[in-house]
Length: 189
Image: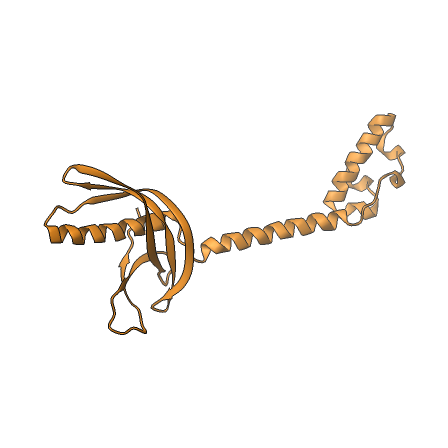
């Protein structure tokens, strides 16, 4: 059955057309009739079905755009958080190793549980405070040690081109009204 067999009020909407053609096929099959032998008054006309179908599709499209915009406009993903946490842990462990005159450790973040990502501003650029728990492995002088479910607080700053991230570490400041930060490029594998 083609589009030309449908009455004008059903030809402009693919949803109505599909729905009505199915009704006609079912009725023809039940009564052993040809489609043109059934009057179109036998086909129910629901004026709102097409409009609802279009509205649902627009709503779904808007929802997809809004949800994808959240990640496109700045939230750090798990890979960035893992790399930032690894960098922060390496810096801390390297400082301790230097003071104790030990070999620099190798750190691998194994499990990462993110509790919260709060937006903030560091040096006039968008940043996030990331809170969570992590399990990591520390390897030093051939020995491995696993540190389980330790809480962490991480500050990540988005770069102007929005392609890279920097680890921001608060520094002690002589001025109590302004926070000083040191930032380090996060290497992403």
